[in-house]
Amino acid sequence: MRTYVLGFSKGSSNRVHVLVTCPTCCRLYQHSSDTPSNCTNTPFGKACAAPLLHPSSRSPIRPFFVTSVRQQIRLLYRRTGFQEKTEHWRSMQKLPGTAWRDVYDGEVWEQFQEVNGRPFLAEPNNLAFVLQIDWGQPFKNTTYSLGIATLVCLNLPLQERMKRE
Image 1: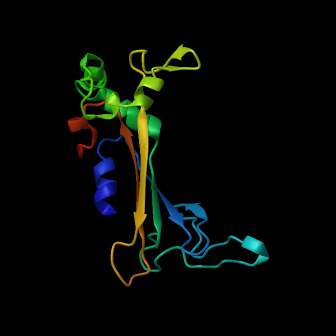
Image 2 (image 1 turned 90 degrees about the vertical axis):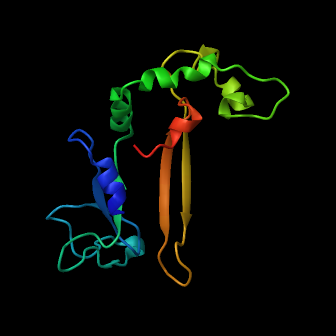
């Protein structure tokens, strides 16, 4: 998880907030000096009381990382050439009768050119995103699971979409 936090923490305007998640009932808490050591949630009338923080460091046992989608989009638009790259798909020619090369060749992309009779993707600077979620156990015979959610801008060229920066 540390790589994720460092990767998204570059620059003072891009903040990643670390929340504390109860490992038993999944209640979220703000991470601060006032965060209780044990869960105070009372689901079904019974106190959860699961430990939330490591005793020595007061770091979350189960951290949950959150960042603002709006802030991330603002940061993308500050990158040199981003806006031009999001419009490149308009100049791509469809090759009839061939296999799809990208999402732009699909029916859904065509359907979203207009939504409810109003221009959507047909309008310049409107962006389309896909939310990808994957969860699983990273190792056999473990009780830990790992999940990731990514929001990808489909307007970007295929070779630009999943770049690390």
